[in-house]
Amino acid sequence: MGRGYTIGVAAFAATGSFLFGYDSGVMTDVIASPNFLEFFDTTKTSSIIGAINSTFSGGAALGALMAGLTIDWLGRKNTIQIGAFLALVGAVLQCAAQDLAMILVGRIVAGWAVGVMSMSVPVYQAECAHPKTRGLIVGLAQQMIGVGFIVSTWIGYGSLHAPATNSVQWRFPLAFQGVPAILLFLGLFWMPESPRHLVEKGEYDQALKVLRRLHYDGSNDDWIDREFNEIKVTINAEKEITAPGWLVMFQVPQWRLRLILGTMVQVFTQMTGINVIGYYQNIMYENLGITGHRATLVAGIYNVIGPLANLIFIFLLLDRVGRRKPLLFGAIGITLALICEGALNSQNLDGTRRSFSIGGVFCIFCVSVIFSVSFGPISWVYMSEIMPMQIRGKGNAFATGCGNWMVSTLWSQVSPIALDKLGWKFYFIFVAWNICVTLPTIYFFFKETKQKSLEEIDLLFGDRALGMIDNDLEAKRVEMADSRGDETQVEDINTR
Image (cartoon, rainbow, N blue to C red; front, side, top):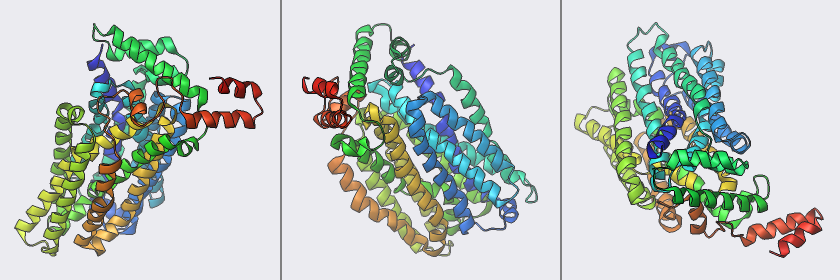
């Protein structure tokens, strides 16, 4: 079946990423609903709104960490399925909310679901992808996040045309989350498991069968055999020597470096300010003098241009230009756009200078476009591909839960207050971080990984791969065997 089948599998799995984007974006229009604000007796810049968004991000952090356990135990596909079921439960709770406590619980459950899927979908995609198209395949996760934002915005925009006395303004957008959740949950019964997970579980025949379905093009039998043997030898070698639990990620130097880089790329993604814009762009537009349905309409246009840029980038450029260069470009470009945004806002405090307001909107749009050709897709690609097999589940869980969602939780809570109190000065927090931390870290420490197999990336980071034994892991295994008094195992290790 080959490339088309792989893209189809990856795109369907990315329905989980669609839910990520939809659930993240839907609150932009919900908090613009007069009925919602009246029903919960709040305002757009209150701590209650911050709590509704931060509980979602907090639930996502917990969900991502939980998925680090289930993704190795139950598999990649089943973990995504669990996330889809939780998303359905969260949708029901939110759309049926009768008080603040109920909607907060619904947002926590929805966040839990998104956390599960935000770390498991890229892992599944990366393990199913061909090395030459892994950027495209995993980049589909970001693409569907963007599509989720688009759909949420336009459903919200349409719902806001209902009378202010009608709760359909906010209940219908929240209820719609259940539709893709049901489709994903049911459809995954027909999707293949990751071939690498099947090898890890010893299901070699099924793993080879899935690998052929994903990559066979009619003439590459030798490549498939080599790829399968490389996966099998590497995973079996890792299983022989890997210590159980989470601590091994921090104890082995090469793995610790890869864990730190995977986590930092998620932190850097949040420090572009992209989720602050996603959650609170209506407030930003009001500060520019754009109010009411006009603000929601501009938000709808904003949510379209990013995915269009992302689509062009992942299909035409990502697997050619690599990872490092776009990340460096993104950090510089977003920093300049935020500087311009802050400067324009500082000269247009009451939002009455129309040309400055247009310029402010343009800068916000620039952030979206630049993000979509840099951190947006690459954060998921780079995180999922640099983790070695034996910590890929837990490593991605840690990187997503701590690097992405915990930082997102912070900004979700404080941003509406900061936008109200600090105004244009708030943008320069992100500017300072990008200049002082993001740019030097990427330049000096990030390695290029384009078109390398996941097993070849082990060698890139100085790890053992293809059955070779890493001295740190080997020493750890001797230590573990010795502590158990297993003389036979110690003798066997020492004779290798």
